[in-house]
Amino acid sequence: QKEVEQDPGPLSVPEGAIVSLNCTYSNSAFQYFMWYRQYSRKGPELLMYTYSSGNKEDGRFTAQVDKSSKYISLFIRDSQPSDSATYLCAMRENNAGNMLTFGGGTRLMVKP
Amino acid sequence: GAVVSQHPSWVICKSGTSVKIECRSLDFQATTMFWYRQFPKQSLMLMATSNEGSKATYEQGVEKDKFLINHASLTLSTLTVTSAHPEDSSFYICSATAPDTQYFGPGTRLTVL
Image (cartoon, rainbow over all chains, first blue to last red; front, side, top):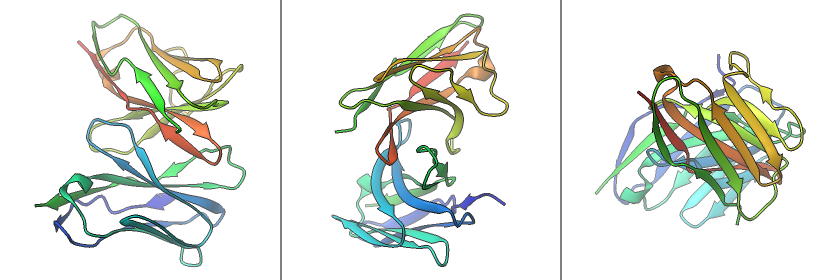
């Protein structure tokens, strides 16, 4: 079993829909949680960064962390075709020297 | 802020030649940089951790003599693929650490003929 599990998709939604992307993990020592967006043939771009449990909102994006369930989510409101990309969750322990453990990525397609 | 560049963005080379890829943090200093490899429709595979002023740490299964890493300054790390072969064709991505997380470069597509 992988340390971080993420449904590979593809997830296809109509423009304007609310998108929910999720990751589960097994390592209870993870304290920092990130979401990256990767367009085809580009490097990952940091979208959201959270520490420990709770919610964080940035524009159309909301990140949630539930450490008790070892479950994190990224919500995208009013999804746009430009949101079509692969979304990677990543996480790390407190003293891991910025070494990240990644999920496999979920491919999202937002159709006009 | 936190911009990371890579050069070149795309390189084609003949089998047996060596290729150097540069990774630069443009607006911050990074004591640690990471090098990843990514195959189509797959996630990132960590190859090595590059620390400024010291030898790189390679992940299991990565040949250190084939993938030479040099972290000469707080803003520059280089990956040299030596004696490249077609199976080395891939997308190589670097990242640089800023407080608490990693910022990624745009990637370099290597095609070995």
